[in-house]
Image 1: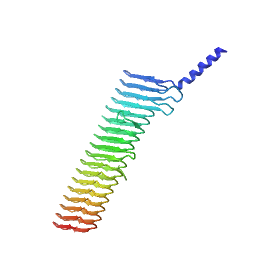
Image 2: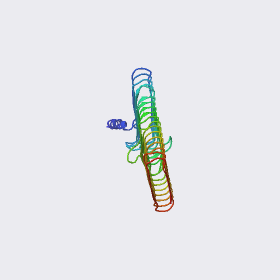
Image 3: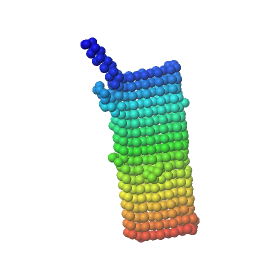
Image 4: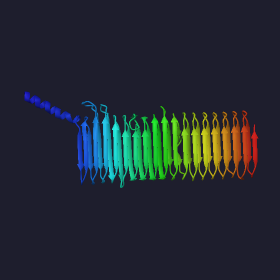
Length: 441
């Protein structure tokens, strides 16, 4: 009777042990493959390595500090390498317990000479790296904290991806990075710290570079590039509400640089900020809270800078044509600018440092210059400039003033308006050539 009871207890232990034990499966075909699995510290870890081709290398190290039990922490790694000379390195350290405390990594490398390295620390992180290329590619994923998710898919030649959620050693929870490169020589770097960051990068073509760096909380960045030689740089430091940037580049050899701090600032509010220009540049800086920017840039050799440094400013900008320059600076509160620039070699500068000012400007033609400075409050300026070699200069320092200027056709016209009193109103219309008008009130 005693022998039967002992046998039954041993059988029960054997049946229960797979719930806690580590599991490793290695399949190697062809020659000079290397696979190293270390699962000495932890419970219910799972590693699956499949290697075909020649001279592939895979290394998996998984451990955790959870105690034995049905809800013990567990890590899962699945590596498939089908090309030649690929390297995969996975490290997962799970410091929590419970049925949902699972780090999971899946690497698929098809092609030759690809390298993927994944480091995950914390609980519930997930990383998927898929590289299908016939040349050397590199993906380096590092996640700290818990519940981070990273997906990388590279198809092409020489692409390099680095995703670091937590700035190498900082806390990062519930952050998501989704990177996809199709083309040649693309390079992406995503650095996220804090909680619930979201970065999506899609690149197609050649020689593309996208850099996204976010800290704080609840920031979202989405950069989509198709073309050659383009550059996107997005830096966002947000508080509880976070900042958002949506960018799409379709041209070549253009630059888009956005720097946002504060809270609830948005680039590409209604739709993506679309840059389809060639050899052009966009520079954006938004600080404070609740600023929004919509716009687009097309043409060749255009330059655009937008700065909104207080709260609740709004800008809608569009630039096309060739060799145009547009500069918008709003440092007051609740200002709005609607700027449309076309033609060639035009220069538009708008400064609104007061509050609740509005500038609506359309500029075309050739070699025109328009300068608007509104330092008062609740001022309104409406300008249409479509001739050639025209000059418009407006300064409004009072409150509640209105200036409307039309320069159409002809060339060499000049209009100047200075309004320092309150509720002043002025109208100027110039259609011919070499006209001059000046209003001071």
